[in-house]
Length: 220
Image (cartoon, rainbow, N blue to C red; front, side, top):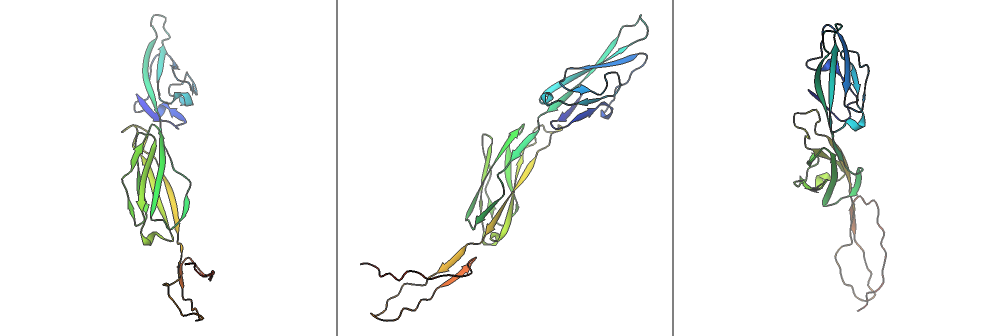
């Protein structure tokens, strides 16, 4: 018996560990699937998988009919299991402005029953993933070195059928962290009436210029 994963377009009988064989007669294949055989009289035909075959077990029956009317037809069977594939999805890549935390959320589907976020590039700390239904979430705490860089996170499903044909799957999610503008107007101060006001501020980060505004007297 054999197994394939959802998304496999065809199954070639000649690739089986033990291909079919016969002697003294003619062959005829029949099956319980929704797909079709390239030939039902070839010894090792190719089966085209139908979407409705997913998550089912197809039984193929080989009937060999002898040329002698004294001999009854003989039958042999094998099964082909079409396993559902695991699915995973994440939001579109994002650009953010120097956050302290990044909240990750993706989803799993198909035959996947679990998933986890991992950090591919980035210097901060990623929390343990949490699963609620089909939603997988985690929180990433940024560090200063993440600014002006692109972080890459990966959401990976569990292996849905163990040693079967369907593997775990993953997809990446990128977050670019832009540096914020920073400005400092200095400390508050007092002057005597009619004195000059000298303003001394500073800026940094992504800012390239600043403008003073205001000058309205505070009301007491």
